[in-house]
Image (cartoon, rainbow, N blue to C red):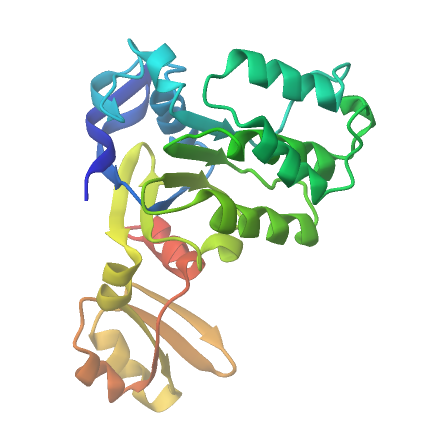
Length: 284
């Protein structure tokens, strides 16, 4: 696999505040990567650097280009959907299609029309008359009709109801993603996308604290449902995290023998959300 994004010692400071502290990570071609972190952890700064929207120190290559100095070339190959799909309110849908056709050399108008046929969006409607869900559908139709190699999503379904959210991610998988394209997504609704992800990046206070494929996560981390009688044995193995459920304890372990853990109770793969919470609290 070839890296579509490669960050080495990536740093960004705002005065005395260090938003990124020597971040290292890569995104391979044909992967769906979840960049997960609490508010203020550095997610948005990473995305801005990738999209050429902020200066940075260190080395960053996106599709072999420097986002800071080669942004024009980069934007021919990258698409972005932000947490708020903002489009000019006075613009009509058909005018938006005409505009993108004129300005983007890799936009496929026929493809966009096919996507919009699946919606109830009226072509001569103004953007301001569309619901938030419809604006997101229009935005997605425009983006997925561009022959891009990288799609960057920043809370793309924020504020949408569950039907629109499910439809959004289904369209991504069926119409955009393939082995030649990659998706980088940030979201607080991690439960909705964890089954789509191939890789995880956890960021905390400007540092990457986990960079792993889902397969590696499932090998390295395991949860055990432990009864009261065996809880002392479980605690002796220094679980990464512990919580209670149904009168028993759920202990999360890292790099422990599954044979040994099986003697304590039932084994489960942790959810991305539970692993995220545990890693955020680690060392506290």
